[in-house]
Image 1 (tube, rainbow, N blue to C red):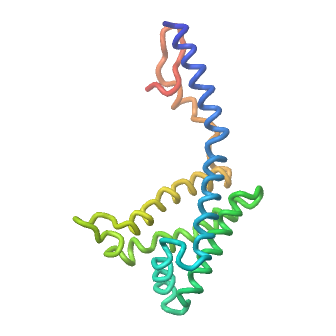
Image 2 (image 1 turned 120 degrees about the vertical axis):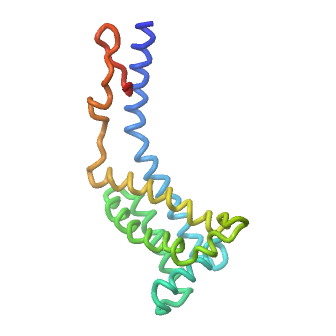
Image 3 (image 1 turned 60 degrees about the vertical axis):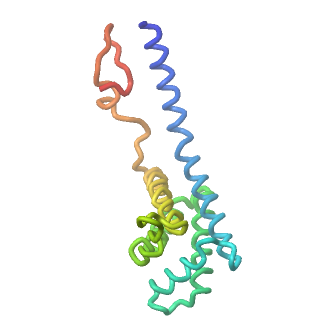
Length: 177
């Protein structure tokens, strides 16, 4: 039993180290590609399923000063720039800063147009509402990338969290409480 616990502990430590090394870079790569893809779609009129929502949101947020078509091009440019910044080494901080600004516009339809987003049966989210709701996950992912880019992500858990419970023989298993 002791050997099995030791083996499992080593496996857990190894897997945790690998995840720590690759998870945030993979998340950053994924975000970059998603933003480039969504941004490029908006450059072609009628190709993005969010085009009318983008136009309506930009018009509302700019108090009608930005024409709908220009607003879509601005959003497309911003999203593409965010994606490129997340993919180009050295521009991550700029990318997450732009993403922070973009999230205001991206999530504002939740407040501005709730009837459009939750107009399904029993106020269920419409397809457009689901499109906006998934942006909450993108925001959470961006926060993880931002924390790492700004140097605030811990590279490993604190020992007090990892090794709370002693096992027979003085060994402690990671993650036990």
